Amino acid sequence: MNILLSFCDKITFLNERYNYSLSFFNTNNKMEKLFISNELLIGSGCNRDCYKHPTENKCIKILKSGAKPNILKRELKYMNSVRKRLKSKRNYYSDFIEKVPTNKGIGYVFDLVTDINNEISKTLADVYLDALLNNKIDLIAILDLELIKLKNNIINDRILTHDLHAGNVLVRMNKGNVGNLVIVDGIGRTNSIYLFDRFGFIGKRKPRKKFECNLMPIISGYKEAFAYLKNH
Ligand SMILES: Nc1ncnc2c1ncn2[C@@H]1O[C@H](COP(=O)(O)OP(=O)(O)OP(=O)(O)O)[C@@H](O)[C@H]1O
Ligand SMILES: [Mg+2]
Image 1 (cartoon, rainbow, N blue to C red):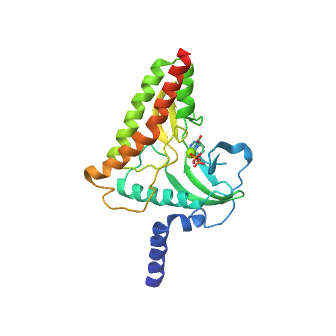
Image 2 (cartoon, helix red, strand yellow):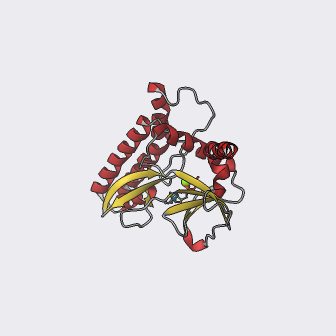
Image 3 (tube, rainbow, N blue to C red):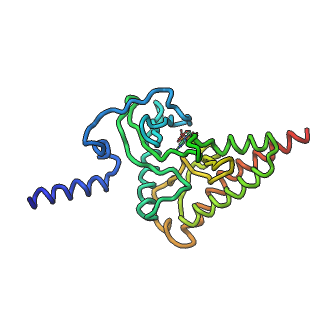
């Protein structure tokens, strides 16, 4: 009996330690492939296709052919460590859940970002450009405010980003109003130095810099381009 218990402990430990390698067995201890049809496609980036989960309120990301898995693996490792450190779930980024086998290859399951009416949220790029195009001044002001909130959140929680652009942030809407911004991609580190990242002032410096140098120039660029077009 004791031997059996210690074996179970070991499996639990391994499952926690190597979360994604054993999670194929998480559901019903089977290795059934999940069938994902093309109609479930939500969006496509440079490296991954993102599909709606066929049965659950989640999304599944599949690496495109030729895309290297290294960045994704680093991202998942970082997200797992952040989850352990923060101890509670944050609503401003879509978290990694598990790995599942699918008919399209290995699927990486994440929280699905939806509006209050369950529609899949639009990207910040789409919403911001639409607001500029249609001169929705109030909406632009709200989005700018939400950007500041997002920035403060990732700085306070010391979350590193490496690829934050307006297509990697979704705008969750709540009955016609902006709810909050959610990062769906680009969380993680670009190198493997862990020293000081989680602590004090130094731990806040990098998240601030990444946000200000990656995402904000894109938003300013949108505004400048529209101002230019208006005057010419
Ligand atoms: N959690 C999510 N909920 C809803 N839609 C999502 C989610 N994650 C991604 N998407 C949609 O799928 C698109 C592509 O996903 P993702 O950004 O993860 O791919 P990528 O190839 O890593 O992107 P990039 O080109 O930025 O490297 C996003 O732009 C977004 O429209
Ligand atoms: Mg992306």
